[in-house]
Length: 122
Image 1 (cartoon, rainbow, N blue to C red):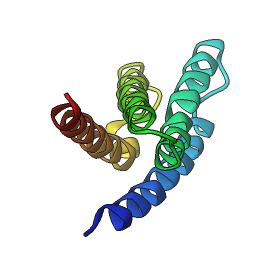
Image 2: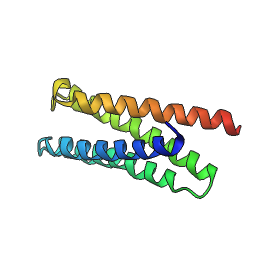
Image 3: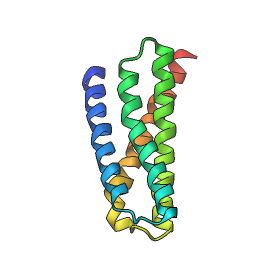
Image 4: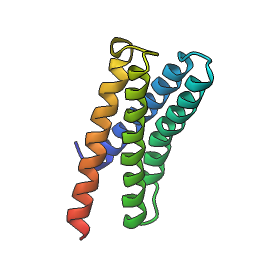
């Protein structure tokens, strides 16, 4: 797969992930504590797709690298909130496994892109 096809596929994949995170967050209860986590995971989860889309439309290599780093950071944060949701007992791993696995894969992808860019341009 060439870079353009990979970028389009990853953009579609991050958009699908955003939708899954929005749906997952709507399944959290309405307690004050879960509202805080719902807000956090929605922000970080939706930021992944938005920042990757922006990376693909960046004006420079430096801008692209920066946006990919943000994607990596936001993906890591989203995984953190998924861990908190499970640890708090709000949703089981069984119920969020698909989102958790996809988040792990996206994190690995963005980490790899970031490392490759760092090697290439440093």
